[in-house]
Length: 437
Image 1: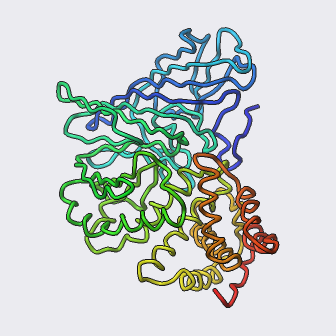
Image 2: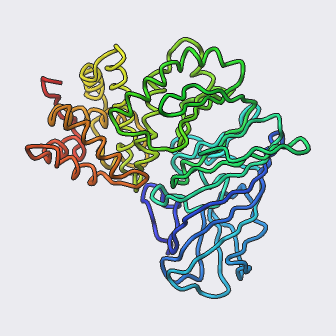
Image 3: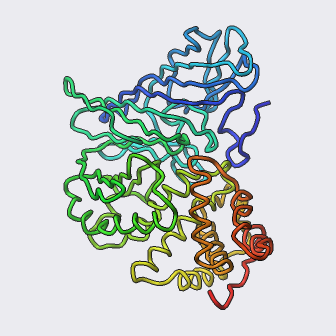
């Protein structure tokens, strides 16, 4: 029987080993949507191991697998898993270097929440990995708690700009193709590893404190300058409120030539559609939200998906903080507004365990933000923002559960927070807002 790593995604994740690094050496042809290459995975066994699995989409075919320079007895692909059988059992604590050669025409996974993973654009491609889309383009142990080092080397036609996580280590053109190599210094969850390919140009936005760069079509540059003008001020505010920006290589915003239903986050990168870059300033809330995810979600990451409010509630509350700071509605006004809307919505969601169907329900976002606002009212601004800075520093590049946050918060309160968290996190009924809110 296969061990279930996360009940929300019972087919994702694997046991028996722990990955420390992915090296992806890939080629992508835009016109034919053909991806091919080699993944080299460095891991250590956590138990005696003769057979094991990796997550990999059935749209990709594997032509060769080797473990520690030896061919395994056999490998086969079935139901989104690559099954590997070794010639000899490895003991617990043994090093493994797994080399997988593969290729195919990648496509997204159809999920409860729409298409997830590698997706063709009109003239390019993107990866939207949350929550289980990483196997659509590379073999992996796909669960948020399994953070690892990563290097992406992608070769594509020279007319296209390619973006992946981390610093651009090298860019080499030859015979009409360009090879781009990216590597972040921080460990990354597989769903946060991304690849963006399009007819883009790269522009510096700000070098004040944290480098911010934009990658987008030339036609959208003027709109971007207007719509995203206040990103440096957002960055300054969030660094003050949440602690130092957690990623060494700065922040990159990609705007695709296509429209996207929603923006997407990856580690060190946010991806917006052309419809979010119109010059009319209508996406500022989303711009703040995606930036906040670099702290809440991408650095401090949930162990399991049931704790998603620790990503989305915090990023939603960051929207309210930016509004408050920049002359819009105060956080208290937003709290009253969204509390009324939630009061009119079905009362059948438990924030700390919303269920797979409601994983990205807007009630998770807004009730999560309301929980933080009520906590702020309870412990005061000084303690609240000290708590957020402690949270992001203590669990920097780590994984967390709801209990980690509630336990840490208890150290910033004079009275027990148990009634507050019990009502907001573990009960379906929406609690009343205090008059001070």
